[in-house]
Amino acid sequence: MNSIKETNERLRFLMDNIKDVVFPQYSAVHTEYALRVVRDVVSALTSPEIAAQFVEGLPAVKELVESDVAAIAKNDPAASDQREIVFCYPAVTAMVHYRSAHLLYRLGVPLIPRMITELAHSQTGIDIHPAAQIGSGLSIDHGTGIVIGSTSVIGNNCALYQGVTLGAKNFVYDECGLPRDIPRHPHLEDDVTVYSNATILGNITIGKGSVIGGNVWLTHGVPPHSRILQGSAVESFTDGAGI
Image 1 (cartoon, rainbow, N blue to C red):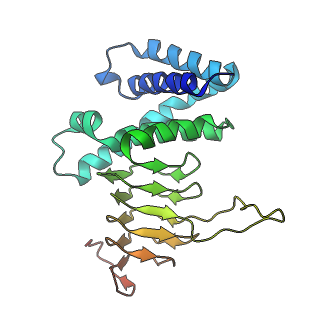
Image 2: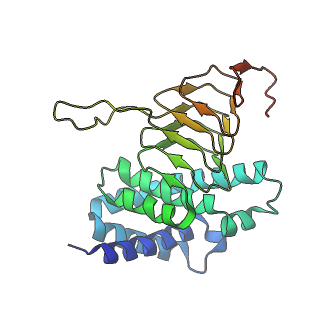
């Protein structure tokens, strides 16, 4: 059995090569070489069969990460170009790790997906559980302190700012007194924006196109196109205007 240190070193090497696959335009190695390395490392950590399936899934990972980069470029006027985003933005590191880990999670690999997302957590301060379901085009601005729980669902073209928590409000326990792994985190529908330090808790739905303001504490669902401000009731708006 590999030691913790050895496994983490292999995973860092794996993620470096996955980045070469996802961003070949910025890589010093040929994509085919990076893919061979990825296959070999995943095979050593899991099995040749899992490694083959993982490599087959990497084009979809690449497409999703590219959509995340494009979303950041669209939402952040401080970004000069996509090269700056890829090289400098912690969100890109977090999403490459998360989307790779989520693929391994869906392939039934234990432990390794969580170790991958924790590597990103330690580097970026962005904590995304590999079991969370995240659609395309997630824009994370700054990102420090973001927490996305394991049963969270995030739709397409959403935006999260620093300090956002998508967490559980409470737990349901089994007959042995252990918490049951059932849906307990928020579901953000498409085009939702959550501003800095907002906390959204529980198995609730934030409707399409809604805007959740900074420092809001929210434990109930809201309908589509709602605007939630600190200390206010639910406001609905239909023109898509943000805060």
